[in-house]
Image (tube, rainbow over all chains, first blue to last red; front, side, top):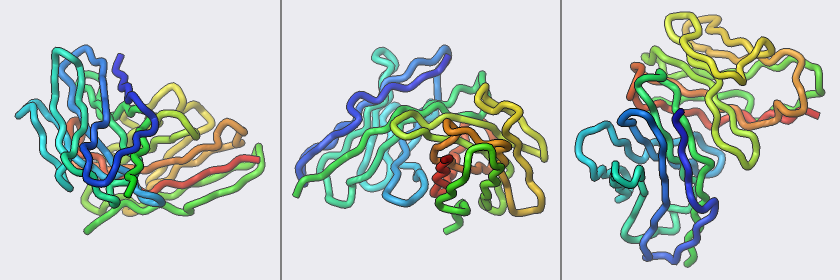
Length: 114
Length: 114
């Protein structure tokens, strides 16, 4: 069965500091992995996705994530946090053997402190 | 930029009543989905829909739920005889293709069952 674990339901960083949001997955086959962001009163917006090409994936707004098979991880990072990065972040996994559905983590709320 | 829209943004209903949540997917997309998120819990897959029929559904999607694409633009989720535990945020999503394809999410409908 597929599942996603996001460690830390709330993360606070100072403006300009490194952002690290953790995501670990379990999957019986090489998965496809996604990070979505949700700003207040908006839908989930795709930040980036891993689809078995390069293991280091770059997304929008200077976010990137690295797929590490040995650690079953897909952590999201950004070198320098902006106030506008404050939002809820969701990691999701898609397993080709089980169809189109996404399996989501519980989300991490990012607060950026000025 | 095309986006998925959902109405209403917030729906309050009495236990036992029927509700219909509405979604307008992106116009050229072929796959449609409903997810829900109970407060403080994971975003959970409910159902996917393709070619005018359900392609996958989770164990949550029991006989109480139904989906319909009544015309060329709307995609609806009906909950018959709502229960207190149906209170959640319901997200609609659509994708151009199936497996591995980015799913575009709407802003959600918050359903409160009293």
